[in-house]
Length: 343
Image (tube, rainbow, N blue to C red):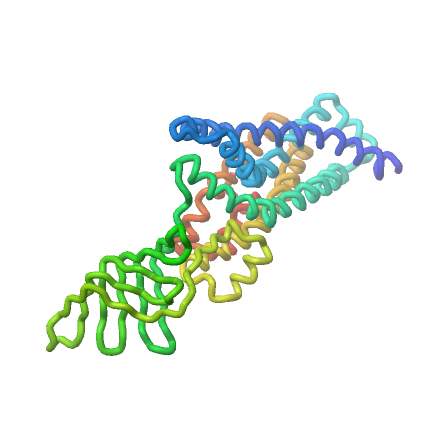
């Protein structure tokens, strides 16, 4: 009884966890290779400092861990069970009356602990590092600061009834103004358009340069060198979901921060954090079940390799489907977990 309840589960976990650490280091190194190779070329070209490159690599680590943590699970479980099967230790355990499911329980507990670690990384560590990663990435590859640009900005003033539109809003480095392009201001009786404009954040105005005024069809078009409109709204901020902690993201989802495609992507990122964390638990169940039930270890290994391949195919395809509104965000996020993936 003691063998079943304490000794065997402990022995099995002791076999798995060193292999998990080794597999985790292996996958982290493999995923780092592509980042290091691309960053090295850009750093040499732009003469980027070593400290900035190091910051770039460190800030990418949480995102790499998000992928490597679940992948190390089947690697460790299959090698451990393969060794036990090769040395006939599984046969001895089965002969002693131990059922395969009794060996699956400690593996599931180990997978649950990895899932908790993956959740903390995905929900809090990665968002904190993602903002730094995007900023430093721009400096490493383009040798300049990350531009603060908002695409397709539309604002309807409820007090005046005017509609303010700009194709892009690029905030200047001083933080006191922003450059506008593709500008339109629609008032009750006339519409103003301009190729460029300036948003003065201190004076709270929009200035259109070389604007064209459209009124009724009976009146001719008017060309205005400069025209100014009062504008009280604050500067728009692009709050990228990947850079927000789970708590902040949840609050933004229940406000008017996102709309349209951005709202779908934000909901996808919210569900993805839970789905990615549970991937480790699903992987340990799948790899453990295959390794314990299939006597052919080569076949078990091939089955898990195919499952991991399907995992990455779905992993990369789901965000695009959400962007095109082809799938509901929650469905796309949970389809990335192993039980729903093709193998």
